[in-house]
Length: 116
Length: 107
Image (cartoon, each protein chain N blue to C red):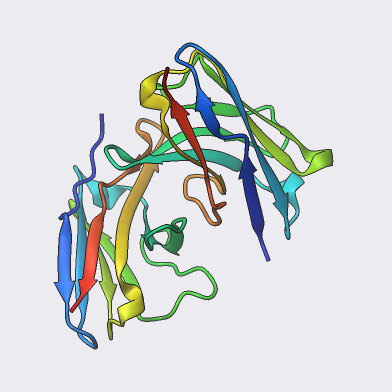
């Protein structure tokens, strides 16, 4: 059974940083494309970032480009999202999800709140 | 930017058929997928590539896509089908785009 467990959410300061992690199990992580998707009541679901199997092909939503960095460690079956220069509008539940172009499996999400 | 439009809410009686729409410019030229999200839970993929079902998804769920509208059909609707349904598409120009979601109530 595919399991994705996010962690690292919490309260972040405007202009500050947070690092999210996603621990994967139940499937061959190293052969799976991965994504971060976020959700707010106001804006709904928003794709944030994509990384391919080898980590050498990466895409970002315009809203986070230049501030967020997606990465992965296939040896540790883990996905990461480094979030810098945080803004209030980054407040959301962040999900890691498998897939390319659509998302087969999702984690339970981790809540990020950006506030002073 | 590309937009997908979904009606905010739909009500359906148990055992009846619900048709959920998702509209976008020339949407039929793109692939569409659908997700179901229950309160407090993560989204679950129901349909991908317009009409394909992942393993474990009941045949009661079916999809179509033509012109400017994609449709998710839920047959023999059950109480456990309540929740919010999201459509989603992608292409090289738009990246990934989600619809705003339709809340389904089974009365």
